[in-house]
Length: 206
Image (cartoon, rainbow, N blue to C red; front, top):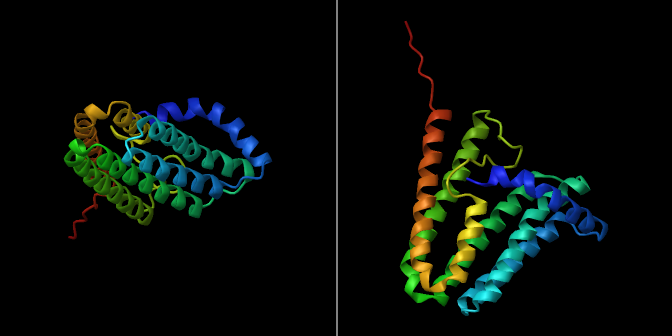
């Protein structure tokens, strides 16, 4: 919901950092992998109930995730493979962090299990739509590798939700239920979009 609004506002902050990383000879893939490793470390910290450590690592992971794209543009190395790696890393970190939280806060396990299910369906529906839209000749709206669609729960909301999980572990179950509902609404929004964009046109023979 907030990604399209925040992305242009964050770009002036991310671009200078990307240029610094380029001067230090970091590659986009190294930043993507750094975000992945840091995200997995955040999940491990959550599993140990080291909530503040988990929060710091989680936010660092998301900062690195936001930098690989600008760095690729600075270096002139944008590629479909980079977009693929970034997407897989994101899915891995989201799922691992939810699992880590479930280990660290057993009272929230059922809610987080349901949240993981919504992540699975959300990611799968996005990939299916992206492949079908590509085959139908529908251009990606923002030039990214996949056809990301607007919805109630996007990347920004996921960052906020996971941060709240570890900031308020005693309320984690309630927060996870709420976010699972938001992701479910997002899936529904995508299905409605798919029905409109990819609906076959019928022909009448006479």
